[in-house]
Image (cartoon, rainbow, N blue to C red; front, side, top):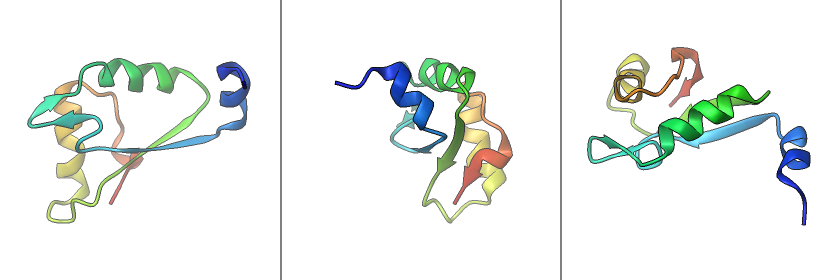
Amino acid sequence: MISTAIYFKEVKVLLIDINGTLYYKKKPIKGAIKAVSSLSEKELKLLFLTNTDSKPVKEVWKTPKNYGFEIKLDQIYH
Protein backbone atom coordinates (compact mmCIF):
# COMPACT_ATOMS: atom_id res chain seq x y z
CA MET A 1 0.00 0.00 0.00
CA ILE A 2 1.28 3.47 -0.90
CA SER A 3 1.30 5.96 1.96
CA THR A 4 -0.71 9.13 1.48
CA ALA A 5 2.38 11.30 2.02
CA ILE A 6 4.29 9.60 -0.80
CA TYR A 7 1.29 9.68 -3.12
CA PHE A 8 0.70 13.41 -2.70
CA LYS A 9 4.35 14.13 -3.52
CA GLU A 10 3.66 12.73 -6.99
CA VAL A 11 0.34 14.51 -7.52
CA LYS A 12 0.66 18.06 -8.82
CA VAL A 13 -2.92 18.98 -9.77
CA LEU A 14 -6.34 17.88 -8.55
CA LEU A 15 -9.39 18.34 -10.75
CA ILE A 16 -12.50 18.69 -8.61
CA ASP A 17 -16.08 18.81 -9.83
CA ILE A 18 -18.15 21.61 -8.32
CA ASN A 19 -21.90 20.87 -8.27
CA GLY A 20 -22.61 17.60 -6.51
CA THR A 21 -19.07 17.36 -5.10
CA LEU A 22 -18.64 20.63 -3.20
CA TYR A 23 -22.32 21.40 -2.73
CA TYR A 24 -25.67 19.80 -3.43
CA LYS A 25 -29.20 21.22 -3.26
CA LYS A 26 -27.97 24.66 -2.22
CA LYS A 27 -25.86 23.38 0.73
CA PRO A 28 -22.16 22.53 1.03
CA ILE A 29 -21.55 18.81 1.32
CA LYS A 30 -20.46 17.86 4.82
CA GLY A 31 -16.68 18.08 5.13
CA ALA A 32 -16.15 19.58 1.66
CA ILE A 33 -15.09 23.05 2.84
CA LYS A 34 -12.57 21.54 5.25
CA ALA A 35 -11.31 19.12 2.58
CA VAL A 36 -10.71 21.92 0.06
CA SER A 37 -8.99 24.02 2.72
CA SER A 38 -6.76 21.10 3.72
CA LEU A 39 -5.84 20.33 0.11
CA SER A 40 -5.08 24.01 -0.51
CA GLU A 41 -2.48 23.91 2.26
CA LYS A 42 -0.53 21.21 0.41
CA GLU A 43 1.63 21.97 -2.59
CA LEU A 44 -1.14 21.01 -4.98
CA LYS A 45 -2.81 23.01 -7.69
CA LEU A 46 -6.58 22.75 -7.36
CA LEU A 47 -8.77 23.27 -10.41
CA PHE A 48 -12.54 23.20 -10.13
CA LEU A 49 -14.57 21.98 -13.09
CA THR A 50 -18.18 22.27 -14.12
CA ASN A 51 -20.26 21.56 -17.17
CA THR A 52 -22.65 24.36 -16.20
CA ASP A 53 -22.41 26.37 -19.38
CA SER A 54 -25.64 28.30 -18.78
CA LYS A 55 -23.82 30.70 -16.42
CA PRO A 56 -20.68 32.82 -16.86
CA VAL A 57 -17.60 31.60 -14.96
CA LYS A 58 -17.92 34.43 -12.44
CA GLU A 59 -21.46 33.30 -11.54
CA VAL A 60 -20.33 29.67 -11.22
CA TRP A 61 -17.51 30.82 -8.90
CA LYS A 62 -19.80 32.90 -6.67
CA THR A 63 -21.85 29.90 -5.52
CA PRO A 64 -19.10 27.89 -3.78
CA LYS A 65 -17.47 31.15 -2.67
CA ASN A 66 -20.71 32.20 -0.95
CA TYR A 67 -20.86 28.81 0.80
CA GLY A 68 -17.43 29.46 2.33
CA PHE A 69 -15.06 27.70 -0.08
CA GLU A 70 -11.77 29.53 -0.54
CA ILE A 71 -11.62 29.29 -4.31
CA LYS A 72 -10.15 31.86 -6.67
CA LEU A 73 -11.91 32.80 -9.89
CA ASP A 74 -8.96 31.58 -11.98
CA GLN A 75 -9.34 28.08 -10.47
CA ILE A 76 -12.75 27.61 -12.17
CA TYR A 77 -12.99 25.95 -15.59
CA HIS A 78 -16.10 25.25 -17.59
